[in-house]
Length: 159
Ligand SMILES: [Fe+2]
Image (cartoon, rainbow, N blue to C red):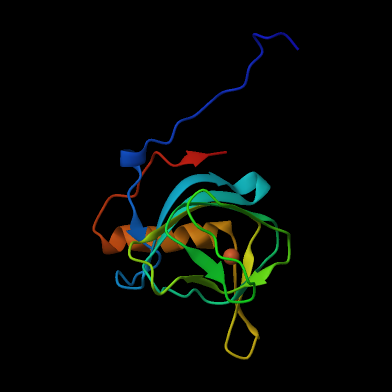
């Protein structure tokens, strides 16, 4: 391959993709900013922002998860580590966890995620109550954008 045969590069500008609550509840304690949607490979790239003490619903990922903590501290109730700024977390496919931003955090926690595949969401009895695929995941962002009264951003990178 010649050095001139190069692939494309794309830039998602910070101020062209807004933060929005994840879902219709603006006070749910978690915001999301989707950077890239790769439906062909069932992959989504996004940022989450968790308020101190926010606890997500327990879920299982079908594929792998890569996470990089930019700000704040978070953990999974099922594991004994805490991730802080600069830490990288890799999760094998089929990982099950309940994410929590530490209650004594003094600032929101911001994490960059690359998630492959969908996820199964569990109820309190560990029964699967919902399976979320990449389009459904993006729908939660869309609901948040609508709740803010903003136009849906057209600068999300897509394959
Ligand atoms: Fe997860």
